[in-house]
Length: 254
Image 1: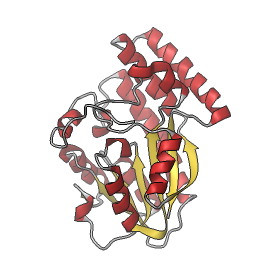
Image 2 (image 1 turned 135 degrees about the horizontal axis):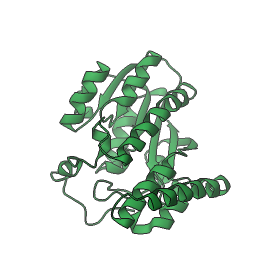
Image 3 (image 1 turned 45 degrees about the vertical axis):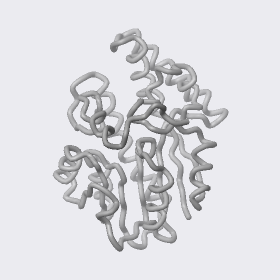
């Protein structure tokens, strides 16, 4: 699915300047921000292990596309990667440079003659105007035995169907594309790549349900928080039968 109508490329940037867009800050101003940052800190080690267990290190280089404020790059440095970041937001990019001491660029055009064993996109692909162009560029700099890790929301999840227009995984107009496991797999294959494995992000159902309750009710309430926990848990339980978790990570290779 595609967001329609969608902002022009020149207008997209202003939608990331909102104080509500927590991915571009490390400060927790609200309860939901605190939940997000707590969950993010918890999952950083899990992501590191996922990459170490699914990557052949020959170049020993990692690229985090859409690195935000650099939290994952900082974590990856602990595993002795030579890490690089791409982040179009000036504010987030400068913050990432401070905490990582890694090269963080505005676009892929600034990277030349480099190949990477691991390329990560943590909830980034849904923001990209031209999916095929990006995947072809990333494919060209992925080492022959390298691995991409692509995390996106899954609108076929139970919580996606439950909240419908209020589902936070849609996040319009920032999210330009909306994926199911079928459409994501087709996109990858159409670009000459292969999905080797699909991994669930189980904490996402709780956070996305929490945001969805806020959108549905107009604010964050105790009742909404309880409902979010119940719905997040229900979504994960049902997903154990059909694989339709709230967010999915696609492990992709050439």
